Amino acid sequence: MTSDPAPDDLDLDTIEELCAAATPGPWFVRNVDDEHAMNLVAVSTGEGTGRTERWPGFDHRELIVATLVQQPRYVDCADERWEENAAFIAMARDALPRLVAEVKRLRLLVE
Image 1 (cartoon, rainbow, N blue to C red):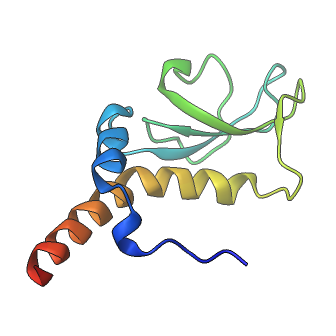
Image 2 (spheres, rainbow, N blue to C red; image 1 turned 120 degrees about the horizontal axis):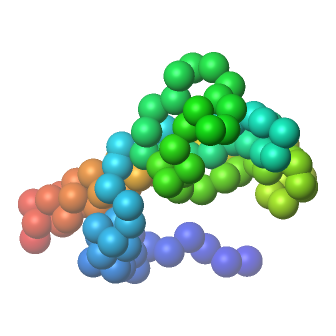
């Protein structure tokens, strides 16, 4: 049986560097649908309209990652949690740097 790493085993500096190197946030969940990207669920730097957007009505350069691309079937997870995965990725862009900063702050208090 493996155990979870102790909090001291987290390489906070590396996590912080990865966050800093990624595309700046905030990130948003986008739903895109057209004849070439049927039911595409993505994470984007730009907010969506709240409706399913069709190309060319969105800027493809804003898309960070796709959690579902059905046509052609390029990205499709077995558990069908496309929306949930996109929401997690978008949330992590903001939350992870803040969590690293908080852990560092708390470590300084403990020292």
